[in-house]
Length: 267
Ligand code: KIV
View 1 (tube, rainbow, N blue to C red):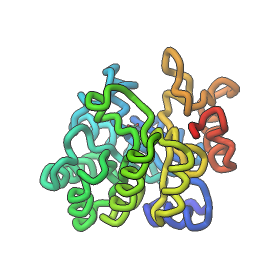
View 2: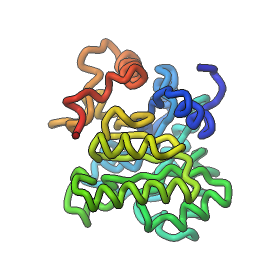
View 3: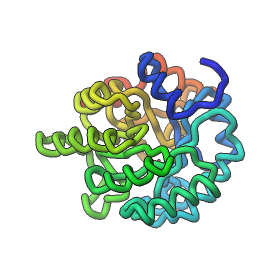
View 4: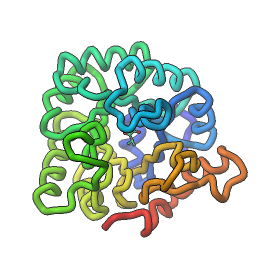
């Protein structure tokens, strides 16, 4: 792999070559430097920061201002990795709001791609953003911003109808112009089928090893969260002597296909 900056085109080439994409959440400049040193391809300024940094019970309280601030912190630490920043709650619901949000995350926050949760309901927004030159990453399956509607962080796509909705919406999001798609907490077979059907890279979290890449929350892989970590995650710090070694262990495991393993996968 060359040391050239990573773009959405680089990720598409990696998919075409069968090279797995590595992504971790990142919220500040120090971690941006460390994750890059470990070879992470994509830094995601996720609105999970509302839970792991701010201590909220969900991502709903996170604002555009918070996202722009943390994105700018990460942007100052990165050189090569692609920087994706999340649209917080309700910013992507209308094209007008989304354009304002994208301008803030890209101009103030230095983000190169914006991530938006939603399926059919955000197609118009995705079309509008990509028409205006904003690269978009979709996010489907478990959509944490909808936690109050779905009543918890539940696995999605288990029955035929919801699997079909995810399948159909994934194709539509790609057709609307998205450059990437995150699939969260869906059965491995469904995620693999969607990854094969789409030409854009699919990054999984709790979606099995058949995706084009993997993303996890950095605090989870460092064993920093009290209590039980999500079943689909792995504590890479447990057998490592340093944070750099733990993150490098994650990168290696994703690239060689040993993460996620069978116990970290829902079939
Ligand atoms: O907010 C976040 O960190 C995310 C990832 C877990 C995919 O959306």
